[in-house]
Amino acid sequence: MAKLKVTLKKSTIGSLKRHKTNVEALGLTKIGQSKVHDDTPAIRGMIFKAQHLLEVEEIE
Image 1 (cartoon, one colour):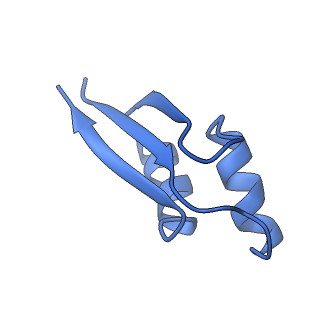
Image 2 (image 1 turned 90 degrees about the horizontal axis):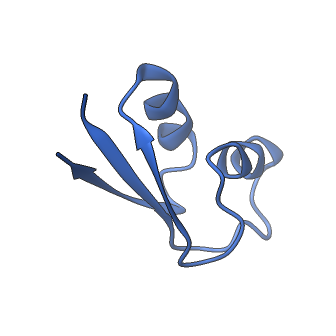
């Protein structure tokens, strides 16, 4: 299964509540922090909601 490396690139200050919640659900709390997740539809959906705050890389 493919993996996704998700990095928080922008602050969540001033963002909508649902964007903050999705970023926290991805396990990201600080700018520059990264987490690796399985590539599932649920994770893709969370990334899509806050894509303007995140950077995503595919890992094989």
